[in-house]
Amino acid sequence: MAKARAIVKRRKAVRNIRKITKTMQMIATAKFQKALKRAAGTKPYTRKVRELVAELAGTVGDVEHPLLRNPTEGERTNRIAVVVATSDRGLAGAYNGTVLRTANHFLREQEAAGKTIDLYVSGKKGISYFRFQRRQITKRFDEFADQPKFVDIDRVANDFIEQFTSGKIDAVYVVYMNFVSAGTQKPEAMKLLPLTSLDAGAKKTADQAGPGKLKSETVYDFSPDPKTLLDELLPLTVKAALFQAFLDATTSENVARMVAMKSATDNADKLVKSLTMQYNRARQSQITTELSEIMGGVEAMKG
Image 1 (cartoon, rainbow, N blue to C red):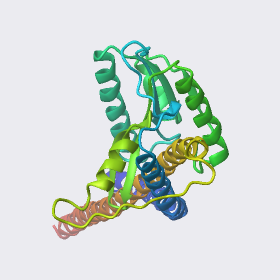
Image 2: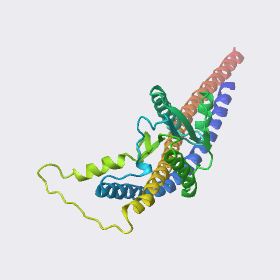
Image 3: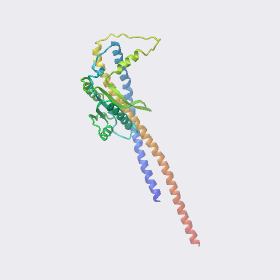
Image 4: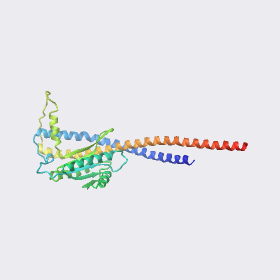
């Protein structure tokens, strides 16, 4: 009887846990849908702004702008800023572990190349991890939780832009989970500054037609002048890219938690069925033992 009671208690505990994981799955699903709308809504804008700036830079020709500056040997400080985006809460499967492993690998590569790193971390999980690793954190961001706001991103991006243009740092990188689809999320170390990839994008667009194919070249009349446009669009490109990175990170976190909680709920269902079978066997064995004792007592009275 004691074994059956223990199984009943354990089954009850598993059912209670299943209620919690099921509720967390529903909450994560609702948050994921909301985050997905924001990330999917801003991604075309972010991509189009980058394409527009790349095309503008390619049309103007040789463009000189502080945000496009690639420090030369004499100008380098060998100091870079790295932003790592993690979550505040756990129970999200391998989400935080994957991002932190990618960040750790990237940091070691940069340190091996002789770079000094200013580490910026968003999320309590990342802060706890780097403190355990005894790695100094330059600044922590607590405002990018479930719903990153552009006004907060704008302030952070302006700080990075000021440090880069003043020559305090050579580059800015963001390590985050890039949201591709509901079934695919990839950890990525994105180069935020300098915007050297714009030149490559402009050349790729110009050569996209390939040999032997018709190429069209668009001629623009600028109003205001190209420098004024770039002064406005280049900082906007940086801010939009950083904002998109945090939106993708939030969406990836919610989908990872949704999948993890669904898996936990399914496992709880299987465990409840297994415990029910064990309880039935234990109860059947107990009933058989009691019947045997009764029959033995009847036979003894007949004797």
